[in-house]
Image 1 (cartoon, rainbow, N blue to C red):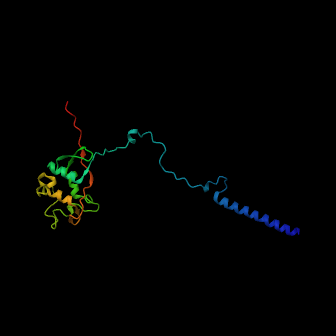
Image 2 (cartoon, helix red, strand yellow):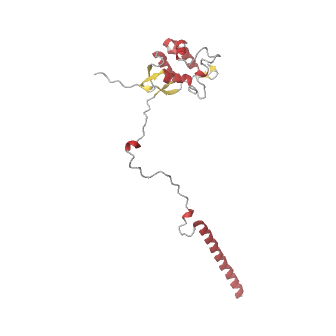
Image 3 (cartoon, rainbow, N blue to C red):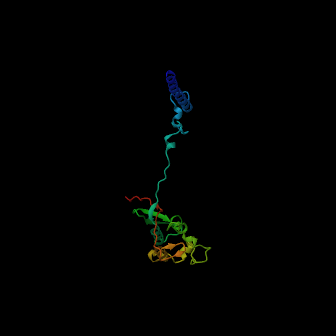
Length: 205
């Protein structure tokens, strides 16, 4: 009977000894011979950015140069209309009033011509006017080269300065599609930012 008890007790003691030995191996493998076990903590990622600004950097060097945004908010057709009514040449400034009531200056080359040249102005994904109306296009352009200021001015599409009776206003009002002009397409008059705010003039004393 005593021998049986010795076997049972020995087995239990042996089990706990083996369990303690196994847990010790696991702990040493994960944490090493230390009680802090920092090896189990996630690694801290550090950047090379210094925490102190060198003395040689002045406040002026740290300031960012911010360019003031002074473009005017208007619609494409209102901008073209202001240019047509003004009768301004290719390089002359013309004035217009933007959507916020500000007096603004525009120029054909900088503000109006891009509306004829760039894609996705009137509708997203729509090609520009010059894709069809250019000097090298023979079919369907009506002999109109929208890249040339002289051709546009001499073509008669500007209505002699009467914007709302001009052929250009009529075409833009009825809608544009990549394949040409169609009355079935609703007109588009996108909001754009163009020109610059006109400097305020001081009143005479």
